[in-house]
Length: 142
Image (cartoon, rainbow, N blue to C red; front, side, top):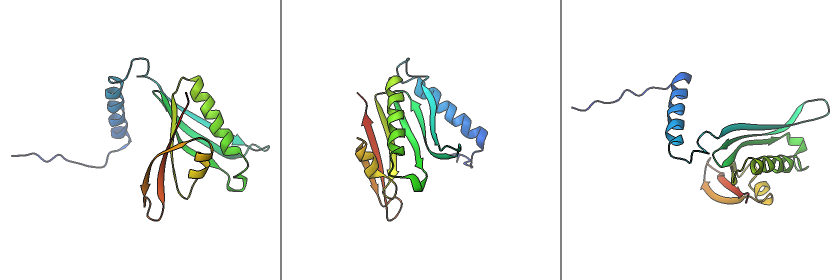
């Protein structure tokens, strides 16, 4: 007789428990000096009146930073704000001893922007979403 597990949608508490357990497991398998390195690093750009016009949301994990979101107000794109954010997060990553930065973007977003800023394409999923591609980039820092 086999027992089918009961599978349901988890709530926030259950999700946090699962995340915590994986983090504990992972910590046992990385060098001690890296095991507790996890930090959110979020940057914003504001105009003269204090309105947020851009930003970068990222996570430092072990020996890298992952840029999760980089956004600039549409009317201000192409004026260097995004490059300034990338330069800042790269400086922070180096100061914190990270060896690379990774990120992902879609073909309708900014793959050329990341290439222009020195990021190397490491993978692409075609037709994700349908009609577009999903790119993964990495930039080594040392």
